[in-house]
Every structure is written in C-alpha cells, then in structure tokens.
Image (tube, rainbow, N blue to C red):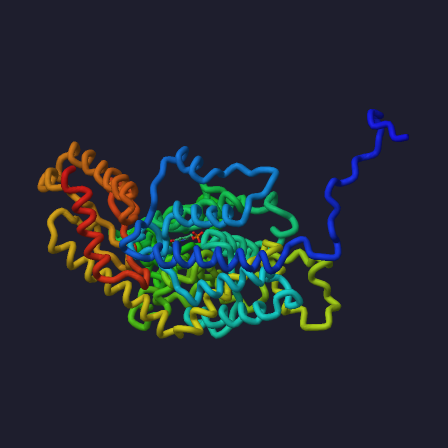
Amino acid sequence: MENTTSPDRQPEEPTCLQDLSKPLIDHAEGQLFLNEAFKIIVEEVLCNGTDVNHKVCEWKEPNDLAQLLDLALREVGEPQHQVLQRVKDVAKYSVKTSHPRFFNQQYGGVDYHALAGRFLSEALNTNLFTYEVAPVFVLMEAEVLKGLRQLVGWAEGDGLFCPGGSTSNMYAMNLARYQMFPDVKSRGLWNLPRLTVFTSSQSHYSVQKGAAFLGIGTDNVIVVKVDDGGRMIAEDLDEKIKLSKSEGAVPFLVSCTSGSTVQGAFDPLDRIADVCEKHNLWMHVDAAWGGSVLVSKQHRHLMKGVERANSVAWNPHKMLVAGLQCSILLLRDTTNLLKRCHSASATYLFQQDKFYDTNLDIGDKSVQCSRKVDCLKLWLMWKAVGTLGLAERVDRAFLHVRYLLEQMEKREGFHLLWKPDFVNVCFWFIPPSMRGKEENADDWEKLAKVAPIIKERMVKSGTMMVGYQPLGDKVNFFRVVVFSPLVTQKDVDFFLDEIERLGNDL
Ligand SMILES: *Cc1c(COP(=O)(O)O)cnc(C)c1O
C-alpha cells in the first residue's frame, strides 16, 4: 500500500496528461487570433494612428498607466477576447509614431511596403548568419548593400546591417583600430599605445559610447570645433591631430557627421578627407541621419566627398521610413576586413566542409550570433517605389522645410536659431509677453522655461509631439524634423498654430 505521508515518496504524476500526437499550439485557433489581432493593429495603429482627428499620444501618469494595463503575469492564461483587449490597450496607450503630427524624433511615418517586409521577416523568423538558414536574405542583403554602396560611389566594398546607427559607428571604430593594429584581436589592449579619435562637438553621443565600450576611453575622443552652422572645421581637425601626436598619442580615426542630430549639419567631407589622407587616418562618416540625401540628385551635394571615406553609417529607418531597425555600415574595404576583424569561426555554425560556397555564410562578419533580417523591409520598399520614389521623399522633406521657414518668417514670435542645411528646424517660440526683451539674462532664463511648458501641454492634450533641447549657450529651443511622407502642408500650418495656441499666454 502507498504511504502518502512518506517524506521520500516519488514525485506526483502530472494531473493533466499531454496528448503528444497533436501539436501543443492549435493552428486554427492561433490563426484566428492573429487575424483578429491584425484587424486591431490596422484599425488602431494604421487608421486611427495616422488620422489627424485622433491623438498622437494618450498621456497617462506612470502609476495610472501601469494600473490600466494590468501588467502582472500570472499562473493561468487568459481567454482570447481578453488577450485581444490587451492588444487594443497596447495600441491605445502607445505613441503613434506614424501620425503625421509626430515630429519628435528622426523616425516616424509609415511605409506600407516596408511594413509588409517587417511583418514577413517576423513571420519567417529567421537568422541572418548562414546561407543554409537564410538563403533568400543572404543574397538580398548583398544586393541591398551593393545598391547603397553605389549611391555612396563605390563599385566594390563590403558592409553589414547593424542594430542601429550607434552600433554601426562602434563597428567603424573597431575596424579602424584593427586595421592599424591587427594584433589587438588576439592580444587585447595591454600592448597598444594611447589611441585617439577625432569628432566634432556636434557628433552623436555614440562616438563617446563606442570609445568607452571598446576600451579607448572617452578622454581620448578629441572634440573638434564647429562653425556657426555646426559643421566640423577641417583646419581645427588638422591642428588637433598634430597636437595629439605631439603628446605621444596615436590618432587612428576621424568620425565625421553628415546630418548632425540636433542641427542637421553636414561636415565638409572633402576637406576632412584631405586631412585624413595627410595623416593616414580612417575616415568614418556617421550619416545615420543625413545619409538619405544620397538618393536625391538635388541634395546629394551635401555629402560631396563621401566616396573618399573608409566607412559610412546610414539609417534608412530614419528619413526613408523603412521602419525600426534598419541601419547599415558600408565599407570601401575589399580585403575582407570585416570578417578578419570579427570572426570567431565557430565550427558548429560555419563548417568549412559544407556543400555550398561558404563565403555565403556571412554571419561571422558580425559581433552578433543571432541577427535579425533588416534588409527585407528596405528591399521591398525600394522595389516598390524605386530610387526615384525614395528621392521624391527626400526632396519633399526639403520642400516642407522651405515652406515651414517661410511661414515662420510671416509669424511673430518664431525665432530661427540658424539657417538649416537639412530638415532640422531649430527655433525659439517667444511668447508675446517676452518679445523684444531677449537681451536680458533674466529673460533668457524665462525663455528657457517656455519650451518645456509647451511640451507638457502638447503631450497632455495629445495633439502633436516635437522635441526640445538646450545646446551650448543656447537655452531650450524646439527642434522640428519634417520628413514623413504622410505630412502635408496642413500639418505644417497646424504645427505653427498649435505652438502659438499652447504658448501665447506664457
Ligand atoms: C540617430 C543617430 C545615430 C544613432 O542611431 P541609432 O540607430 O539610434 O543608434 C547616430 N548618429 C546620428 C548622427 C544620428 O542622428
């Protein structure tokens, strides 16, 4: 007889036996759910979420939001209708970045072909490391990289889709160091000299992060001066490189910016290339934001000289609206530097005795193992609209900006900080009570508070979103970036009206 009270009894049998002859997930039920969820996504995110009669954001205090969402995870699952309600809630309380009045960041808007590509790569759920597991995407990535390199002006070269522009910039830094000191891969940092990186004061913070991450040190990122428009001064770069050498350091990389994050400034690439050639330094162009001008015959002159660079970082998820994430590092190199620098030759993945050309197993170029398919969304969109269609978007963004500037000039209280190179428009809104008194230090302090108050009112009413920041000696100002293909002139007018409505009483 079984003694149920015995402390050393066998573990209990599972109460519910599993039927192993059927899959654990029911396909019919799952697909029904997916169809319903998809309807909600289309309705809430793509219809309402892009409709100017609906809000850009539905602001809630964090505690209230946590309660509304009922985030806690439990032992027992919920019925389907309740899970669908969860889908709805997530959509409802999320910021609608596709909304034509979302001007907050350098991504936004929606491209339906790219979105189809995003859904397709999610559904296929594959990993871009070997031809064996991603035959379509290995070939596709190579083709997209080739197309992008041609826009840069390189007939040959290499490249990689990376998880974001910051990562692309870090790759460039690692490659530049490896090129100069190939032993670093095996021997590490202990036997290197003090290395220095040069970048402008307006460059993206990922240059600092990269230096910290790669053991170069943020103190060794030498900041080069910019002109009034925020563009690197090549003569100062030359001076700083000489100074660094005289101090016993070894300069190895110049990271230029094409389209700086706040000002939208383009560094003079040709002049910087001269300096890099003179000192034999790796020239990287961080074109995460501005790279998209390369598709436009009218505006690509902003990056004149880019073909002289060693590497370029470019985010089509920003201006081209490819969707997060779509970021690329492009290289002029033809010596397989990317693979030599990053490969670990794992024998379980990259077997050398495979039955096909193992050069197609591109995964070892990356520092990642699993790598998402980010090329499909760009490829599908590019196929659908062609290079000319992409150029149309870029050209349209510049036209919107021209219109915005004209309108700002006609209105009182909009004070432009500098004439933009690109589609970043930086301005102060000066409320009627403060007009004509900008010289006074007290008034600057007051003005610094205007943008944060307008921003709070804007987010709480949900009508639009735009970012603000201080920069150097300039107190808080708005930076509006206009590029979404969904934006019309009406939205630009609304933007100015709304700033006035929210700030006129301050
Ligand atoms: C946005 C941006 C980056 C960073 O790209 P992520 O994809 O957000 O990591 C880098 N450089 C510049 C100039 C940028 O504007």
